[in-house]
Image (cartoon, rainbow, N blue to C red):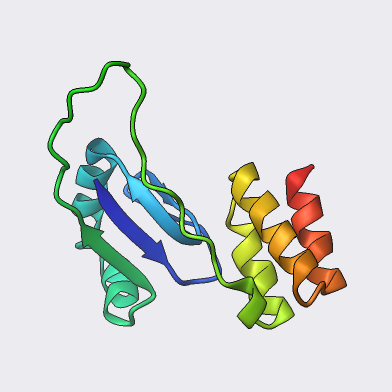
Length: 126
């Protein structure tokens, strides 16, 4: 698996692989195609500027389990309480996990309870 962080304002398509804003986890087939597209001068400029960060991760050893369900790591919750409204809104817009959004809503409601942030979370939950 390869982690790709797109720090630009735009989604990027590199050699047929969609790299959305924020953190992307790519499977090996997509990672191979992305690695082939890395040699493009436009992509190289993004990598050199630090706007596109590519991190290879070692495959985890297979674990024997009683079920066929896959085990995933818990998602990291962005610390929206310490962000300004614009940054918090951008961070929230990259999250699609409903349980994570509900956690953020509870934390924001219990903390600063900023209307703009609460409205964005509620919109993502719909």
